[in-house]
Picture 1 (spheres, rainbow, N blue to C red):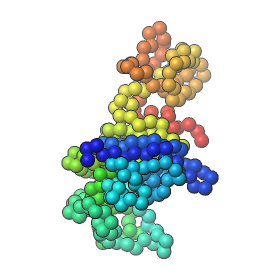
Picture 2: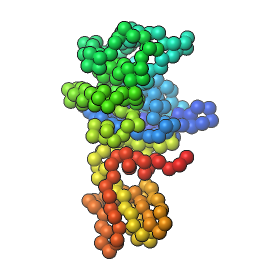
Picture 3: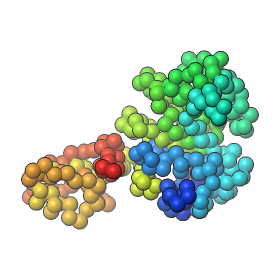
Length: 294
């Protein structure tokens, strides 16, 4: 199992004439925690649903351990995509009790660990007698977290797991996640908008923008390879002429730019230039890459 990978090859997803995923190529290795970040509508949830076999691809392939994921139960048993619960269903309010929802999850997931689920219910202080329609947004997030972690799936996708959780509950989630990761070496993909507080948890980060994967990179390597420079416009233009530039902004005669260092470059050589160089955190890098106006 150590060589286990989930691989998306030339993955396309379209709804009618609208293509929302464009020739995605992505490899998820076993034993890593990936941060999956992108703006609303970038394609995060769609990609996770297709990669987990819950949504058919328009074209391309998804495999896990070399097995096709679509309509293949052996492959799908290795994957859990725990998505946001809804207080409503097709018949109106979702009156399912939390305990019955967890029982159903245990039925459908072959490796579901009921004892661990009970432990997590206690850790989060969740009332399993409540109906889903009566849960707060944070409580619904707790249910999805419990299902995902207790699934014991080799590849576990969590879509906005901390939505609605307060800071104490979010910290508890990340600690439980890291404990489970250390104990099992499972692969986790965490899609979130709350980037900076989760950055230390992500071994690798995947950035998606408008249906395209912009990069997949070790989080620390990415942070160390991107800087922001500012100074007189002509000096900045000279410095960035042959570099990857993620964003620029102008204020009068001054200019700022977010740039990537070149391979093998540990810091930017600014000798002869009167410019300021500042490090970037993951959230700032993401905004520079994807924060343009629509």
